Length: 254
Image (cartoon, rainbow, N blue to C red):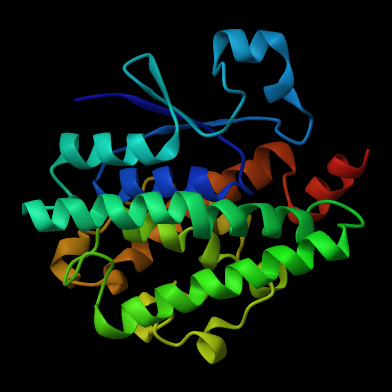
């Protein structure tokens, strides 16, 4: 049984992707909080010992450090036998949407959300340009999901996890009301469980096992494991490190 350590910071959508995938596959992992706002990932020591690319997340598997979220998701899908493609057509569609997301939707949404929420005085012209591009990408995804239950057809895959990661954060961070603007993206069975975030409650549920999403047949099965993934990435970090959106803003401004 592999042992996993996930280097992360709780505001990171890409960290959430890996936490969700591991949890849905029933794999336990040790969360390793990283002081991203303190610029530790820019230090020569961190890049020498953790990730030469200077990025989060990093997943350690039996002591071997893996980087770049998309290939890690693909590796986990193959290793766990879950949330990959079965046929040649499904595998192609998975790669098509995963690469599209990394280049387009996540590529722009992650930067837009960061500038809009976590740094002071984001350039309004840059934000307007990014918003325009994201509107286009969301329109593409909306049309696809109005005809398909998930990215590759009738079942969820790592392509869905990749695309939904930044979209599940609160609307005050990304500025969208998806229920009104993109209903196919946010069908009821795709919506994350709405609940008040309580770091203490999250900490109490760290050992709750992940639910089997296959039994549900759609993203409704992600509700319980999503809570666990957030508990590990947000709740625990909030307790141990005082991490929060406000705290991150302050640290970024300093």
